[in-house]
Image (cartoon, rainbow, N blue to C red; front, side):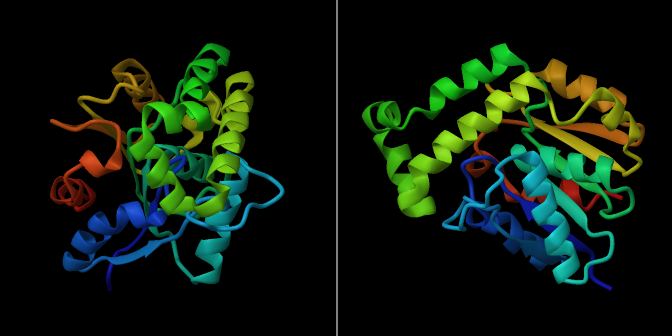
Length: 226
């Protein structure tokens, strides 16, 4: 029987970004599933927007596709959603592999991150990124930026994943960090690894935060580990 794995994208991302990884996993005889969270990749916004809502969507996806304890790879926010889901719904998913997930959230962190979500500044200073956002999310790209900023503010006020939640996770978890990631620190990544009982750490060399910089061949090797 093929191993089932769900690939989860990050904030401001969409399932299409994970296609190179999906193709390599299919070649390794995985049964691969992907979807875009609401408000992303031209998917309609729901009334709620945040980790809890995205976790609910992951649970719905598993139910609708009749999946049984599928493995989950979560990039950035996708990794946070996967761990949140595992903590709140024991037994629902199998092994979890994360990459570039930001775990430390407080008011200072949120304030720093939302400075990068101003659509006017993005168009002025990084026009290629603005074009990419428009292509990926359509006319709702500005709304996505604004709602993501609001989500980060809420996370800064109260992190959805507490230390107690992380300690409760029984899944086998591989926590990954790119060696050139300027958003996520080694310290916060290692700290979370110490809280999760069945966890291990891995590092991607010559890789930055954007998933496009990650070598899918290397990620596949990580996902193939028992």
